[in-house]
Length: 104
Ligand code: HEM
Image (cartoon, rainbow, N blue to C red; front, side, top):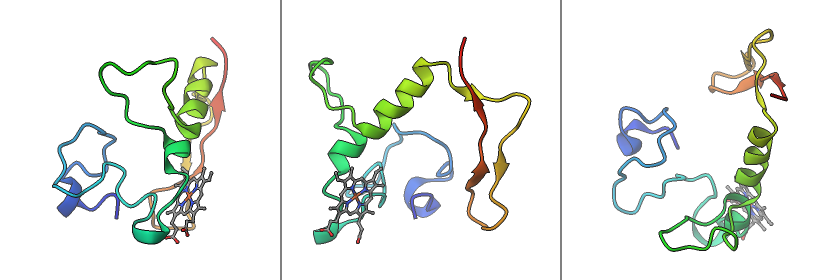
């Protein structure tokens, strides 16, 4: 659903968080559900939008972005000698394995 081209456009599969969306569509699609059982941990998990004038030291960036940023801070990158492979057990575009290396 988060790659629905009728909602997110022809480039729906591209990572493009700044795309213009139809009114009422959240940039994160339905990742956190919707309605009365929507995720209560969304802000904790994904953080709050950073707005002009926000204090960067007091901002809630979220567990997932913080973890990903920490990986990048430690030089995490795809292993050039061991390319990623898609998960062959599903038609969904999921990685089955994505080997990485660390360091400068
Ligand atoms: C990237 C991380 C997360 C994703 C993608 C995610 C996604 C979701 C989704 C899709 C639902 C709705 C399930 C449904 O419709 O029945 C949900 C519910 C819920 N999430 Fe998350 N979640 C995340 C992180 C968290 C965190 C960090 C917490 C708590 C600290 C949390 C607590 C909950 C709870 C308690 C519900 C049930 C709400 C209810 O049924 O009223 N989630 N989550």
